[in-house]
Every structure is written in structure tokens, then in C-alpha cells.
Length: 460
Image (tube, rainbow, N blue to C red; front, side, top):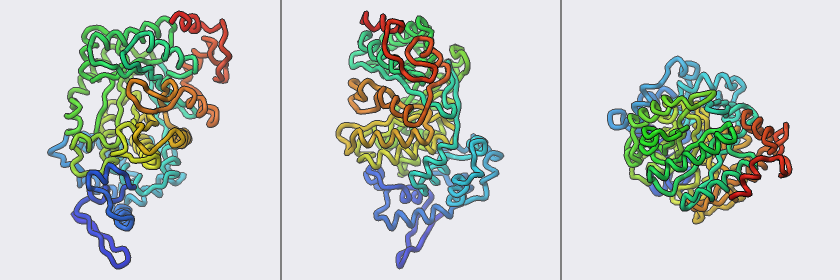
């Protein structure tokens, strides 16, 4: 089916829905690299005019990636819930935007709607929205998950403590972990990106975190962010696995390049559930995504990177994960060129994930060769905080010395908590008070002899 629009004296014709979505996207370097971006601002506006009039139901009839060739498409369409979709089934994309911004679309209505929305619908409506629209709607969405603590409650902000080390040195990791805990971060997860995929090394790291967690009764969860097959092997060998991690993308082809399939994720999900390690919940999966991953693997099928990013969320929600985060600026300027593109992408990703019912976080980050700096990250951090993001990343000094990129620091989390009055996960907050790290209001206390962790810090 073709789509057309006349602006002024020029008529624009788009051969399919995939092209409309790509041409309607805000400008970004990845779509230009892929050759799918609008050639001019006028063409972009023509595509948006067309997109606004397309019925939402059309997305159930015309797949961006063919159903018969892609398991992500099949998962998205086969899991669609018509009853949840019914309240908006008669709307166009433009009318859907208006409804989302209305008072009628409150938190309960959006939660009920989530199973009826496909990722392509979410991506489509985001392309018609200003940044403030993305923030307003996302702020109305509440997605709560549980394992050893409760994440995503209104007025709360969690932080992943990321104590990476370039050689997986146990003392270095422990020092960063203690540093973060003393700043009151780590309620989302203590998650290590290992420098090696050696199973013995991964198992050592899992025991390192778990031994510490048990010794001090920390109400959080651990994760070593290795390939899912390594985690399954670690489970089989009796390692203390809390969360199963995997990077995923929006097409079967990009997931194949990661060595991942839905069947493999099903197996890992079942294995983690069987361990029964969660004390208050059983959300056991942790996914990371990022715009541009499909293009970098030549697995984008001619679709724009933001639509494919939303499709990754369609795969993620199959597993009811504890955590999902977009590593928004990590892939590089080839995909998101500068601070403006990174900020827009971060807001889009958070909006689409929340609309689809996912517990969204963001690694607010950039690589050193991108046209971005820490001021841009401060802006995105603040905007996502206003939008009600579930969690952010905490890296010592905001500089990950193992992955060689710039993220957000423990201090950045303190800033966001203070300026937006965001509390930690309630169970973790109680633990901080018990350990003499924070007071009843969540404010950090001066370091003193009453803090048991300081004695351990002195021994490193």
C-alpha cells in the first residue's frame, strides 16, 4: 500500500508504512547512514502528515519486517491483546497522540492499554511528539517490578551500581562497589560488565557480589552482564545467579548476530525462575538495548533505528523483566551524532518502553568521539527524571574505565534525588538507614565509626 501527501506544489509518495515511519523520524545520523532518512525537512513533515492520518489498526495488517521472515514480528503480533487495544482501536496515530496527552489517559488507563499497543504504534506516535509530550506521557506510566526490593514506585528512583574493572580485579571491583553503596546507590542492581567471558571468572564475580550481599544483608540483586549462554552454564554449575542479562535488538537477524533467539531466552528465563532466589518477586530478566544496533549488524531491513529499538521492547516484555535500559549514546556518533540527537533518542526510548509496559531505565551516556559532553548528559538526566524513569546508571566519576565511555556518576544520582525529591527503593532505603549510611529521610549521613562498611573499606 502506498501513502501520499501534497505540500505546496510538491506531492510526496511513500511506498509502504516502513518508509513513512523512517521519513517521519527526527533527523539522526544512523538513519542517514542507512539511507532511510528524509531528504529534507519538507519531506519529513510530509511523512508526519501522512503518519498522523494512518489508523492504528493498520499496524496490525502491515508489518515493518515480514511476519514469515522474523520471529520478533511474530512475537509482537501473536501476543497482541485485542481487548486491551479496543479503547483506541478506532483512532489514527494523530488522534492517539491527542488521547495520550489528555487527562483521560491516566496511569491506570495506560497500564491497561499496554498489552494492546505494538512497538510500531508506540514508535509512530512518538514521531509526532515534541520532547515535552514524550515526558508528559511517560510520567503518567508506572511500571513496578520486584526481586529483592520494589522498583518503579511513584516518587522513587533506583540506580544500577556499575563497579566495572578493566581486569576484573576483585579489590578494584569491591572498592567501587563500596564507594557506590556509601553514596546510597545500588538498589536497581549491582551489575558488573566482565572484562572476559571466561566462565570461572564470571562465577568468581557472581560469588564476590553474592557473598558481600549476604554478609551485609543488602536488599538488592546482582548480575554479571555476560552472554545469556554463559549465565545458563553458570546456573547449571550452581553459581548464585539472580538476574539473567542479555543485549537484544528489534529483528531476528540482529538477535542472531548476538547469538540469541527467543527459544534461548525462554530457556534462560525458566532456569532463573527455577532458582527461586527472589525474596519478594520473580522478575528475573535484565535487558539492554540501543538505537543503531540493527544497522551496525546490517540487520535493519531498511527500517529506521528508532522503530527497531521499540521492537526490541516488544521482545523484552515477553519475559516481564525486572530492568530494561537503553544504552542511549554508547554505539557512537555514527548512529546518534551529537547531544541533541542523544537527548531526543533517550526520551523516545523511555516513552516507548513505558507505553509498552516496561520498567525502563537509561544509561545516559556518550562516547568520547561524539559531539556531546557532560552538560548534555545533565540535560537528559534531568528530563528523564521528570519523565519518571525507573533507574539510571551509577559509575565512579561517570567514567567507565573498562568500557571506555562516559555515563552518570554516584553524585549525579544524588543531584537528581535532591532536585526532584526522588527516594530510593523502600527496602534499600531502610537498609541504608539501618547501616548508618542515610537518615530516615534518605539523606546521606557524615561518615563515621557507626558505619560497618567503612571498616571493610579500610581493609581494601
